[in-house]
Length: 254
Image (cartoon, rainbow, N blue to C red; front, side, top):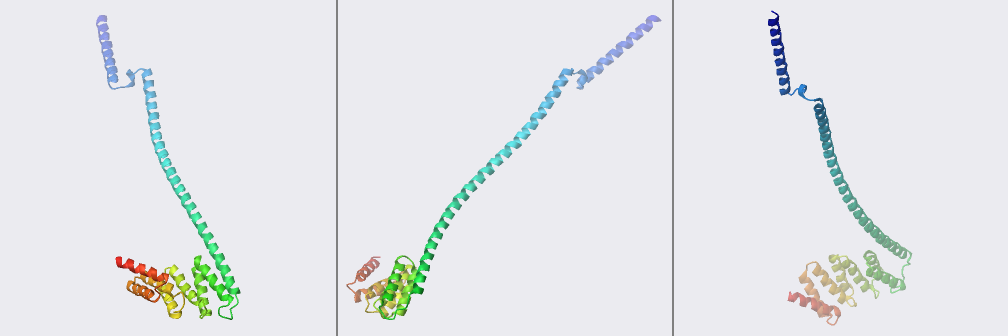
């Protein structure tokens, strides 16, 4: 009896041992921590944490790099805009300053000229000193490009002294002021008046020549040709007649 009981107990213990071995093997196959040493678990946990930190740093570095690139690009664009603005502003400021200086000079001249005109007493005799002064001032204004002032003075002289010696010169000066401003139609009218009003004056050859040039500028070539021919016929020895011959010769060669 005792022996049979002992054999049975040994068989039970053997079955329990085999069952425990099967369970342990199953646990290892399933990857359960039961078959993993504690040191290996600690190392694996550390590696997982390190991998997470590295991934986070990579993401942060990528974002920081993009931000840095965008910032550099924006800084470069702002620098180019600033340099362009400074250059443009400097050039514009300099040009405006120069223009303002020129306008201020013109304004001073106009004010001075206006004061001279308003303070000038009217002449009582044709050919007086006032007429000569007015003509000299108008000629100076014309030579220095103050065409509006010169035109005003020449017209005033013709109006106030229509029969004086300088009247044909003043009438010619009116045409010159208009021609210098490319107002060729009006200039042609004023040049023609030199011949019609002062046909015996010494400014007729010059007036006819400039009349023909004005007609050329207006595209009226046939009229210009007739004016040149009239100048040559009526004043053959004048310098303007020689210039007219050259103009006609050039036009024929064309």
